[in-house]
Image (cartoon, rainbow, N blue to C red; front, side, top):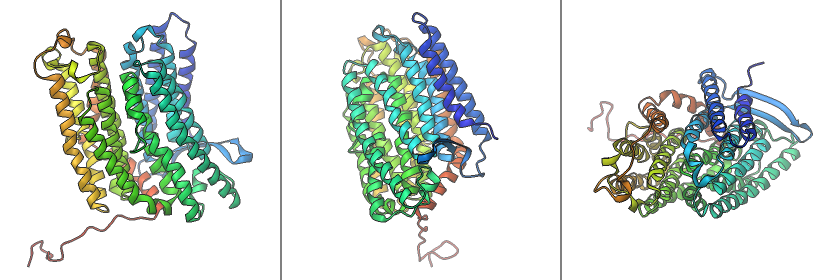
Length: 512
């Protein structure tokens, strides 16, 4: 029997959450150290598992399957393909960074920081489980259960409107979850009629589902995932949640948790409902382009830094969905790579903005100016994170965005051209934000700014290194992703559109 990597990766942060919650009152520092230790152990185990993963091996590896409710065909079934592996790695790498970033934030307004770290570790365990689940009911349970810790993370910590933002977050996602539950039940009933009665991904994908039923099931899953991602017009909960949550919590929400939605689209929706996917793909491409442009335009007009970053994420999620539903290998591979790159860049932006808010006690753009004079390292790291957000060539986000646009152009040229406009808009909102906050005269609120401290440098450095490494050397990650993407697209039954060659071009490459 092989080592149960995925169960271990789930169990370690779950155990850490329990132990952190049990730390006696008055020992908050010990609780934070314990949470950091358990998150680092999980990251190390994740790195070891990644090394053990064979890029050109079996499509799904680290498979575990144990009976859970066998009479209903429910199993504790886990496995990792290339798509789920890179998202698990994103989760385990970002979690200790967020723990360190929250070291001081959790104590704001004299709140007990212990519940924050316990809830964060519990959320990490649930997200790893969702990415690794190979049983649909298990995936659904984790998909819904992760709302609970995030609800309390938003509602207990953050801004003055945090309770409103937490309730809005919960209601939106519960509504999507109910639609998904109806689709899960419908899929199971159909599987029983076909004689299998199962929730296992492999068995469900093999079912011959009538097109009419596929349409309804597709919509049930797709709306739930579009809310989670979020995709326009299901996006309105995210700016409120990101603005009222602490910056570190907003980083985890936008950078990691929301990827469960886009993961569900590419790993579940495409292979299970191939006919409906091909039918609805053009409409979803339109929604994705609207999301790309809308998010970028609204970001330009924001006066709140956290809301601005939230709207940039809506634009970036539009790119991810666009790549998935372009139904090309380049687009889907780029979308998956973009999920990882966006995770690191968004976490960097939120965390660095959090450092500014801690110093300036304000999240409003107009309250800052001249930070590059008083805190050059802080300003430099902010500029780097911003350039990653606008997909500067040489950084990881550029690779993902470029592949998405190239893959989309092969099938939906107009959509790709329109989406490209967002690259210009991204330069506007990022560079204008940098100009207003970091350059110009030093404002009263930024006179006493302290530059990045040692702990803050430790937080920022790995994010910078990862964005650079994945920008210049993306091939190892792309090789891992390709296998999972190929399997999903093969189930949809689509192939890449052929490259067009100018008929007037001769074999020598010149016109006659």
